[in-house]
Structures are given as structure tokens and as C-alpha cells.
Image 1 (cartoon, chains in turn blue, yellow):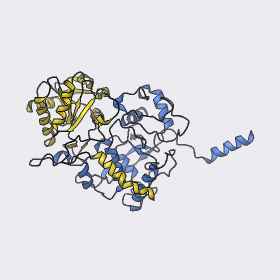
Image 2: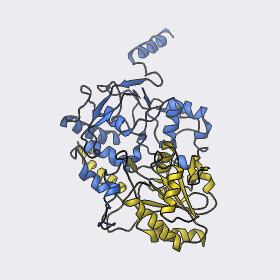
Image 3: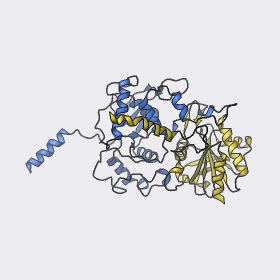
Image 4: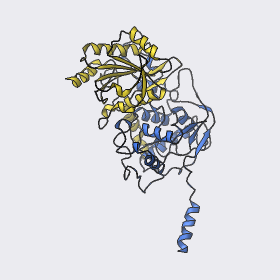
Length: 258
Length: 195
């Protein structure tokens, strides 16, 4: 018996305590270089905000759906989520005993938004997310560091081939935020703003209206950092989503205004 | 490093998903993100958001229930693509079955007041079958997310947005989405709902 207690104490001591529910990091104002810059601007200013240190976990999300039955699997209205919503949960209110500290995935944008509102926050914008995610472990803006970008591409490839790990298992970046790239893709409040900057104007007088590639093909040409393959993957992924999409590799974290 | 080889293929797949439209393909724009491609039927009207129409009345999306609707998201100060979308919808109206309604939802609620929408309806000669709606930024973002519409503010006066016409059945389920220049596809969808 004593040995068991000792073992438990040793295990407890060696394992870092999980971040308390909803630990948020304050992010100072700054700027970042978006893949698609608005015309005339190379960098976009981002005001101060706060963001969760880690993605929302399955355990966190279980609390949410227990307290908010309208968002439970089976009860949720179809416009808010596809049928794969939380499909690997044991039941509508039970995330199961395995992987409770993994990021919750197969959650739609509508649901993620409702969760963050319930927590007294909101989803981060694309600008906020990309600004924080541009940091390496040592530099707040690593966007000019080719080795960092190459490492991200490797990270994305590797995570696709493995089961999702617990939150907090990677080193925090220079802002003190973890897991932005290592575990899953993440929802942003304006994920559906990905299109080329001059879309609504490129069908001007004299042009053949079919000679208009909508937003996507021209977006890559207009990118400010066309060699930033990691960012390109993120934007392409966002472009394939609607608000009710539920994807195995897509989770979220919340943000707040400060 | 072998796993890296999948990346170009992944990127190509993502792009194919995101870029359904090339100039020679008269096909629905949003092949991957399209709500029509998803599983069970659901109603856009379940969004539950509140709007104001061109007469100044507060309305819910659900009040549009009961008849097929042709929907587009535009803004009234838009000079290039939006008039083309409205023209395409007017051509549809001329050929469409009598009970279908036409709905324009503003992407620019700050400037598109109910009065502004009423003036726009007059300028464009829109009939009583048209409903013009303005709401909050959140309501607009929600509806766009549900319909698969992409948009972004470029400046104080301009927005970029996809040029999509959506056909909803009487219950609010998305039955078709076409780029505005493919009116025939929208018309076929509309006829299938009423005959």
C-alpha cells in the first residue's frame, strides 16, 4: 500500500501540472506579414488581445455540452454541424476515458464559437492567430527564418500520420502559447475571409465576366510570401471549410479582447 | 522525411477543393465547401438570427420559410459584381415559377440601412417578390458561414466576396449553388422545387 502511494506521489511529482482550465496569455500589439496582404500593406497591425495557452480539450468540451444540451450530439440543429460532430465520443455527454487532455476535434465553427462565448471569450481572428503562430520558440516573429518555416512543414506532415497528442506536450512559443502547429488545425472567427484582395473589382467594365478566377487561383499569385508553404497550407485548409464542417484534424482555442 | 512527399499532393488536393472554378467550367463554385455536398438536409433558417428588411421591419430568417428562395449576399455600394448578381437574379425572376422569392443580404450592414436597401430596390426596379435584409456583423458572418460565402473587407468602402447564388427550398435547405453567371443551373434547381 505504501509503495503504491509512493509511486503515485512520484508520478504526480514528475508530471507537470496541466494548465488550469482556460489559462489565457496576454499578447502585446504588433504586426505580422499575412500570406495575402491587403493592397498597399505588407504587414497587418494586430491590437493587443489574449489567447488560450492551449487548445480546448475533450474534457473541457464535455463540461460545455453537459451544461448546454442544445449543443449535444443528436440535439444540435443540422445547420450548426455536420453529422460527424463528436462522432468518436462514447455518448452525447461523455468524451470517454481515453485522451481527455487531447484537443477536441470534429467540432464545427458554430459550436466552437458558442463554446468561446460560454467561456466569456471569442474565437481569435485569422490575423490574431497568424500573428501569434508566426513565433518560434525563441523569436516572436520568425516569419523571415526559412528554417522555421521548413520545420513547420515537417510538423504538419508528421502530425498527419500520428494520433493526436495531449495539449501542452510541445514547447511554448516566444509568446508563451503552445500547440499552435503541433496538434491540429484551429478555427478562426473569420475563416471564411480567404479570397483574393481585388475579387469584387476584377470584373470591371470591359472584362469578360467569365474571365474571372474568383478568389483562389489569383490568391496564390497575389500572396506576399509565396514561398511560405506552411502558411499556404493553412489558408488552403481554411478555404475548404464552411461553418458546419467537422474535421478530425480541426480543433480550436478561444481568445479575448483586452 | 518520406512523409514530406505527401505534401505536394495534399496541397494540390486542398487547392482542388478550394478552387472549384476555372474559366471554362460552368459548374457550381464551391465544390468542396458547398453546403449542398454535405450529409443530411438541414435548414439555414435554423440560424435564428434577426434582421431588418427594406421596409424597416425586424424579421427572422425563419420568416422566409414556406416558399423557395433565391439568395445572394451583396452590398449596395458595390459597383462591379453586385449589379451583375442582381441582374442575373432578375433574369431568373423573369423565367422562374411564380411563388419563388428573391433575397439580397447585405455584407455591409454599417452602411446598408433599411432606407438604403429600399432606395436600392427602387433604383434596380425590384418587385414585391424581393426581400432585402441587413443585420449585425455577427449575423452576416453566421449566414455566410452557413452558405459557404467568403468575404473580406478591403477598405472602409469596399468588400471582396464570392459571387454565388444559392437556391433554398421552402424549408430553407440549400438545394443548389451556382456562380452568378450560371443562371441556368439556378433556374433548373428552382423549377425542380415547384414542379
